[in-house]
Length: 137
Image (tube, rainbow, N blue to C red; front, side, top):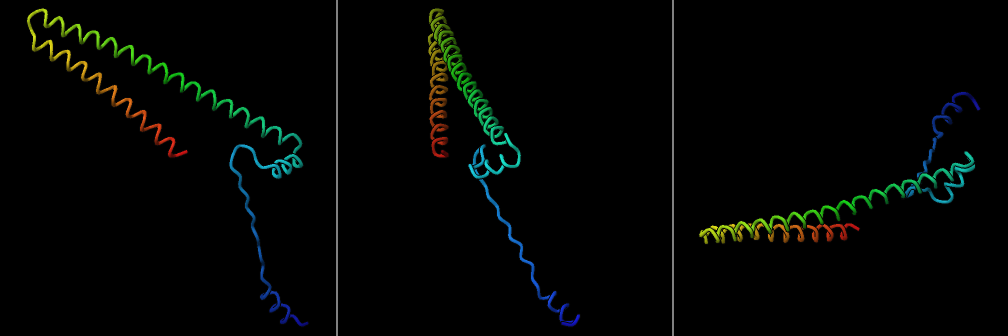
């Protein structure tokens, strides 16, 4: 073969490159990948598992803190609502005792109406939030 023919042959030669991609979901690779990691660096698979366990524990601790804070906030809200209701009713009764019947009725009804609306709105918001969360899961 002469040089011209070799150059022509080289130009016609195509290079084919293939890429392979793999993915996994979650903190730990699948068993095949773990085995490969372990061959590359002994103990690496154990480090992956330890890391995932620590992350899970951390997430659970955070979720527990959020739940406890929500319970505390709910209890505080109920206590403050009780205090507001007592003062509102007390103010209305006091106004009536001093001869201001209309003002006493307005004070009591506006205060208790506001608490009622707030309770209904809060309950409805919580329900809608739970429903949206359930739809997304």
